[in-house]
Length: 200
Picture 1 (tube, rainbow, N blue to C red):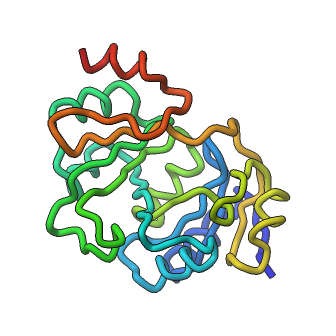
Picture 2: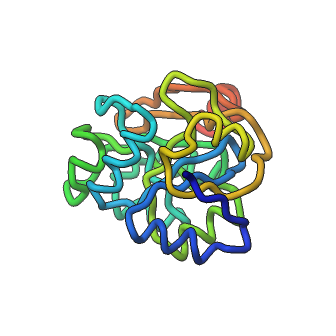
């Protein structure tokens, strides 16, 4: 049975993350499903809860721009996008640093990183540390935006869901900045035109 907690009980959620549990929480895009970064046990639990294929990596969520350079190589295009859109509905895919264990990117040489524009999630990241976060749904099922929708798909498969609802229902825009040229992998609220205006 998945436990429901309120946003006021943030310390319970922080403790659960530090104890390698799987937690769902509202963000400014869709509901997120997160675990402690650096723990293979926690990542395995997350993959199992979602029925997710290990060929797909999970995004790293951090609380500030300065943290990104700890994990990734940041080029000029990436810097422009970070300064314009972060925190916000943007995930950037970087070439990962050698110090990041390949198990944390499911064997990929790249790492997707996002800084959410949600006071609650930012405080969670500040207290619990960086997290691997994906959408709170079963693989190939619809994204979730409320506690009920999360439980309909994941009740009993995850440890905690933070009660609430998201402020939007569209996942973040994803841009690959790992090479010289940027590649838009998924368009969300931040459009191709928005991106072109920053990069030109």
